Amino acid sequence: MSKVLVAYFSASGVTAEKAKAIATAAEADLYEIKPAVPYTEADLDFRNKESRSSVEMADKSFRPELADKDANIAAYDTIFLGFPIWWYVAPTIINSFLESYDFSGKTIILFATSGGSRFGKTLMELKPSVSETAVIKEGRMLSNTQPLVIATWVRDILS
Image 1 (cartoon, one colour):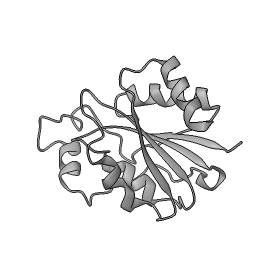
Image 2: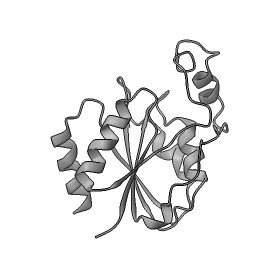
Image 3: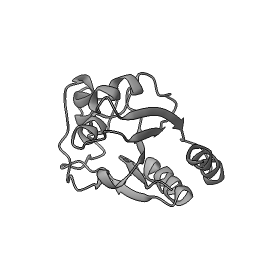
Image 4: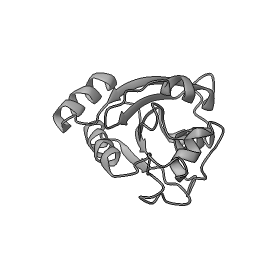
């Protein structure tokens, strides 16, 4: 059986809840992706073009600094990678995470939460952040998904 990691970034706690449900279903390890400078409520004000998140998302080359880089990616075969959708894509901190480790030969399954968006161009924008031998797949939007449904989805992927 392969080793599984659930890595996630959560700005408000919604994605964290879904990540924990996946980790439980997969009997996987859990790793929280944290920014070096935590986001405040004002930073996450999407209506304000001057807010930190708006400024970061307007510049696709921006890479927020990570609080740490101690995930033992080499120990895992499959990584579920979760995040909230911001402007129809993953927050750029996900690119920071992917570019900080060697994902060669790994399978990365994306999951996300959102108030109404879908994955949009997320997969296309994340692919350049991993090696060519990494397999990165668009998984599922889990915003309102119940733990039992999440568990079934995870079992189907891992079987």
